[in-house]
Length: 465
Image 1 (tube, rainbow, N blue to C red):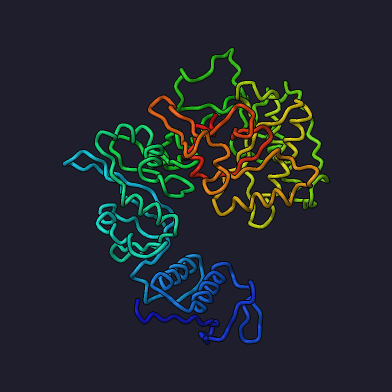
Image 2 (spheres, rainbow, N blue to C red; image 1 turned 90 degrees about the horizontal axis):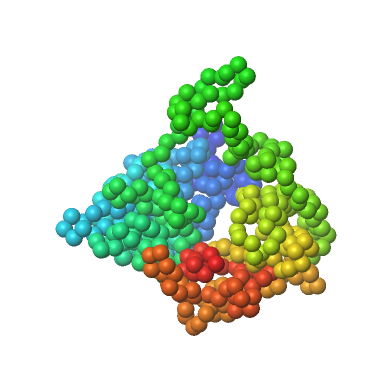
């Protein structure tokens, strides 16, 4: 893209173009007036402003500008992009793996597949162009026909690792197909910092599974399409009847199936936070009375609401008062999500503080350690937030440890450089200490361990204990 130039002007309904404008925060100033642009308009103007202020522009900088302008155009911002209409320039939204069999050797060849706001790319054509991944620094550009795809740094690291080490020997195919995530972690991504292991598709009869939050589950997330609900007939009492269900699956007349709350519910307080109704009646749980005045800073109202909501979801865990009891019934589960900057970290820390307080009150013991998994760049932020949130005379955690190689991981390792090791069906070595209640234990009672996904992957057996 030698000699690439770009200029954005603002056109009014009469197609008069105003070239002089500027952004002041989210406000667009032009012609002596101030305007509030839409989200797509702001994204286009902000990206162009950053591009214009970049002194040394390379091809990636120019392509990133066009890709963002194209995304804004797709979102409804009217931008004249006729020059690049035939060539699709876009950012990759997702990266997955495709596997094909090498007919000569019987090995599996893994290939990185990118997807996003562009037509699907042929895996064979991507494989022919894997050499393109070696070009550039931390971000790669993949050109396939008239489609140019930009990868972010993490996608680039994963794609380059697959291109370099993406061959599954024939004698290891059974191990790979049985547990792709473990094989990938040991053979393809041993030195790659990844938040989630990519999914794998295209391996003969083996069904691809998303290898992220549920590595070992092997759920089939591919080839599925939403199925419309079938409307059954209602009996005289108004109960729904399933027309397509065989008689063998229907409960007998004297059976009373447990009523389960739907996965998505309009009022989770009224329905008991997703628990089975019979369990609520038999509970004799200690009521939560959070003390939100004990912290080094005052929570906002929405943060107080968030803490109470999370505590409500956690109350079933009180059934397991003794840390020595077998796991089970350890909570109903919840997902806390909000815009950036609204204090989710502080809300979560208050939840943990209140939970630790009531555990200590009821059991007279230190609660089990808490594990926080976050991106590498945020571990120090979490540790700093803990210092800011809790008073010196009420630290909540008995210790805060960053389990990273360049931080404090050696404090809980069983020996210098030790790691988890396993053979099918058996763990042969645990890399981290646990279970003895000493400071060499990862699960030191009342402690907080901060780590990354990669470290959790490398020491998954130790952390699982």
